[in-house]
Length: 371
Image (cartoon, rainbow, N blue to C red; front, side):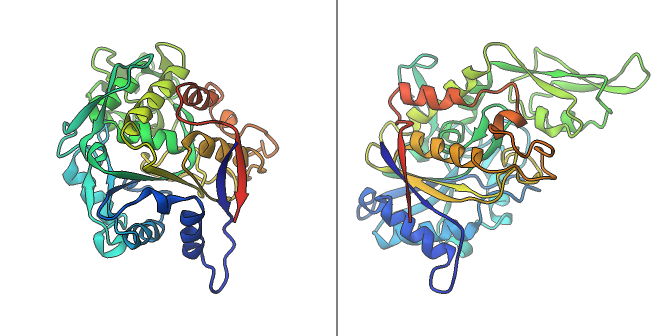
């Protein structure tokens, strides 16, 4: 079993959360990852406009401080999104990051969008796995000497949950890589639920959705499958749940593809990568949505490890041990055991952990070490 280090969120004078995060960094062995003048990619999600569940920039500042004490040169990074939001190119992406609190004045680290101005600055990394012979990883991440991945642990409409594996895989892939990972889905519009508000059409990067008159004499979203690029974002954009994921293959395929991209992101980082998951604001949707729903369980704590599989496994176990919060997406299901399966009944989140273990990214056998 590998150790996964855990700290709860209790704080007091002389031992606030930033102090505890620094202790977690040291106990998890991250000091041994960084050498003098190493370029350190601090991989995180800057949050979409309107979302408030992304990581607190002060937590990021604490990690940056630890890296600098060791002589490393940290930079904050993420890749551009596939969907049409406020992070599809570096200009909008950086503007959003700054507006969400990740400016240099706050974090004391520069911001670099890993796949460049328009998502085309990537390196093809050979992995030779089941779905991909090579994966397209943002070049800044590839060129970095060290990576510290900071992940907000929460739900996800395609993976059940999103943790460090999702942050590494989908988060480090270029826009072309994201398209390859999403190619197994196409949305399905349920016209009886559609109100014709048009939000999905304005969000669609492929201009695959139009509003047309239905038999009931109302405007209804219509999807052109030939134009659809499979990004899946319309499924969470629709607040009326009128668009479902329609799988071209098994739902687990996209999880396994994400894991293969995670393997590519870590390809040249053996012994030079550390991972921290924040099990705080455990929302049902990812931070790519332009809102933040109520948490499904209480805030639990912060976990760290050099094994991404053990880390995500420990986090999902802790969430499933909690009682669901009333007033959340799990309202009326307070005693349900599998929280993420209850939110997304058609998604088996086990796929990503099982496949990551099989290809050697880590182990699901862990020991929780409380500090």
